[in-house]
Length: 182
Ligand SMILES: *[C@@H]1O[C@H](CO)[C@@H](O)[C@H](O)[C@H]1NC(C)=O
Ligand SMILES: *[C@@H]1O[C@H](CO)[C@@H](O)[C@H](O)[C@H]1NC(C)=O
Image (tube, helix red, strand yellow):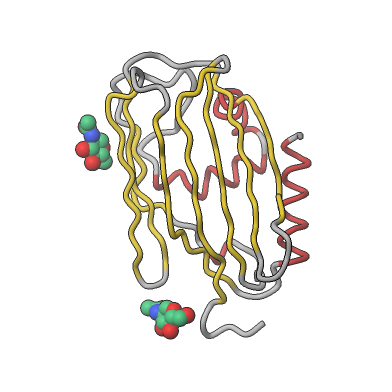
């Protein structure tokens, strides 16, 4: 699936189903290393404060890494409804990092998160560099007025020439924001 299609899908999902004010809660974050020889160190910390979820973490690798493929999916689960797969994509992660900043959608995403990262990551990823993320959160004001409450599951896995490097999963909820009506 192309990035444009993904963007249209996500936007239409938001427009159709997300019509009340929301807070994006993250309940669980896991980052699992598959290639133990590659990672020198990594960590992830999830903090809940004032109904907001903050994610921090870091990673250090021990060699240059290029040609990374990202496979990612997002499912939403609503009460008494079948689970819905919002998207499932496989893309060249390095080309997103290295060229994607020219793409409006990536730039928008990136600008929202740039402040949480200590660098603008580019491929090849550098050895012995501490890539870190500090208290990242989803600014709900950037979302259009959103959703009946639902649960989401986001998965991403990283591979280099079909060899798994690491994968992660985020489980959370979209919760109605207090003080704003639907
Ligand atoms: C957090 O959310 C709960 C329930 O939605 C609400 O009662 C409480 O006031 C909120 N707390 C803060 C600090 O916003
Ligand atoms: C990397 O940076 C993080 C966040 O700043 C820090 O907590 C961690 O100790 C650092 N790790 C190494 C190995 O330098």
